[in-house]
Image 1 (tube, helix red, strand yellow):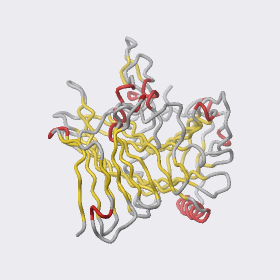
Image 2: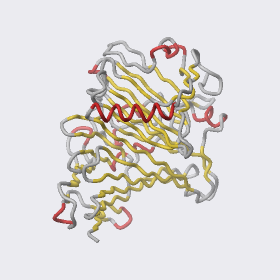
Image 3: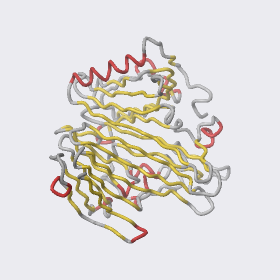
Length: 388
C-alpha cells in the first residue's frame, strides 16, 4: 500500500515543521495531481498562524490548525468559496479578546468559511447576576490552537486526511478535547469532517457544537435561495419575523441591514441523513451540506446581507442546539452530557456545485426528503425555541 503520514506538530514532543510541501512523488501509488502545503503566515493579525492548503486537483481549501482546525477559504476551479470579512484574517487567537466585557470579542477573529462554535457553549453571550461575562459569544474552541497535527495521504485511493487535536480546558472548569479529521479525495468537489469531542474530566461535562458555515459572493447574491427538507421553521425574534414570508430568499447588499436568524428542524431519511442547499440566483452554482440529525438535530440560518464592505454573508449552521444563551439551552435539554471519559462524534460533508445539473440534482434529493410534507412555519418567535 502507498500510504504515508507526516507529523507537523506534536507539542508534547516539541516537534514542529514550519514549512512542507507533499505531492504524489512523496507518497507513490496511482493517485496524481494533488498537493498538501503547510506554511506559517507573517504580518498583521495573521502573524504566527499555521495554515495547511490541500489541493486535490479540482478543489482547494485551507485548514487553520491555529484556529481550532477551522476551514478558512476554499476554491472550486476559479470560484471562491467563503466570504469577505472586514477582518484581515486568518486572525491569530492572541488578537481575539474572547472574554472582553461585551462578550462579543469572538467577532474580532471571524472570517472563516467554516468555524466551529463550542465546545462548552456555542450561543449568544451570557452574563452572571453580577453582570460579569459567564459565556462569550460562540464559545472558545475556534480560538484554541491545535497541539497535535498530522497529514496522511493514501496514494492508492487518493484520500487526504488532516488530523488535529485541540483542547478546551480550564482548571476547576470544563476539560474538553476536539479531535478533528478533515478528509478529501483527488477530484472531490468538497471535503468531509469527522469530529470527536471527549470529556477529559473526572466528572460529567456538558458540551455543545455548532458548525458556523459561511458563504458570500458569488454563491450569495440577490435572488440566492436556501433549500432544505423543512419540518419546522421559527424566527428568532420579532425582527426576523417581519420577513418570515421570504426567509429562504436573499436580498442584495443593504448598508443598514440588521441580521435575521431562523431556527428549524429538518426532515431526514430513516437513518437520520439529511441535506441542505444554498443556490445562486440562476441555479448555476451552489453549496450542499450533508449530515445526520441524530448527531446534529437542529439547524440555524443566519442572514447578514449588509454592504460588501461590512461582510455580505449568510451562515448555514447545523448544531446540537440553537445558538441561544447556554443556560437557556440547558433548560431546553439541548446540551450533550458526557460522562467522565465519554465521547460523542459529528460528521459533516460540504460539496460545492459549479454546474446547473449538480444544483438540480441536489434540489431533487431534498424534494424527495420533503416528500410532499408541508412544513410548519411560525410567524412569531416560539417558547422553547427562542430565548426571551
